[in-house]
Length: 110
Image (cartoon, rainbow, N blue to C red; front, side):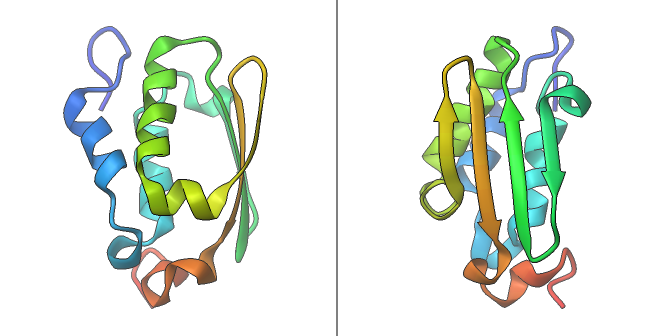
């Protein structure tokens, strides 16, 4: 969760780093990322169903850059989903939900 200064707390960053995609699916991780992003409605775009296009802009906010760093430490998520980064804190992901196993097919794992 964001603290009083709109920075993600350490516990949330650790959850992002250690999120088990095979057990909990990718949608829950994306929700957690969005809950810990300042100005998430302006900084994040999520579209698609079976293949999710996920665009994350840090907006130059160091707290959002901390979230990206936590995402980078989640090896499975980053290695399977990261598509490209561009100068200015812009990150693009192409998430194929089938790569994350049965649990990733929906939030309920069905």
